[in-house]
Each structure stands twice: as structure tokens, then as C-alpha cells.
Image 1: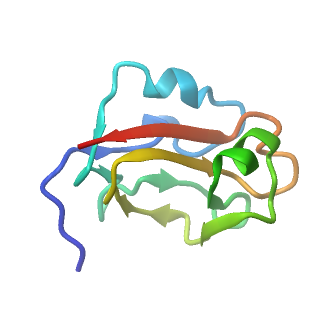
Image 2: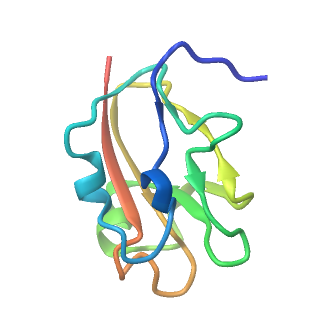
Length: 112
């Protein structure tokens, strides 16, 4: 089982990972650090209906362009948690249909 001593962040709060949510606004006032968890094991990072969405961890170009071919990790369970393990920028998009183009994407900066 994965363990973390950091802060747990539920992406989108009660809205979860959904279309037409402003994730830039969601990140405002939040700090992300190595050891934090995007979600936890009972209330996960990305809460979504697995038959309607997914989560793709991508690079900056794929984030900007909503490119679906350059993902590093694909999450499809609907209740995914990610322990932030390194400093730097992380980018996530939904790879279903035009969801990313319609704003279903998240960029965070992880500090030490």
C-alpha cells in the first residue's frame, strides 16, 4: 500500500474531475509539495465516472495542444491517487473526445 505524509488534494473538490470545471481556479491558493497526494485511498485524487473520463499524465506540449499521443501515464479506474514524488511541473488532461479542449486539464507546480 502506498503511504504519504503530505497533504491530500482532491482534484476539483466536490465536483471531481469533470468537464467545464476551471482547474486553474481550483489550484489558486494551493501549494503542492513532494509527498503530497492528489487524492487519498478513500477519496481519490481524480474522482470521475470511468466510462466517461480518464486521466492522462502528459508533457507540457501535449497539455497545451491537448495531444493524446504523448502521455506518460494513463489512469482509467475513476478513483485514482498520485503521490507527488518529484519537484517540477506536472500536467494532466482528459483524453476522452474533446474534453481537454473544453478545459478538462490540470497543471500543477510541485515544490520541495
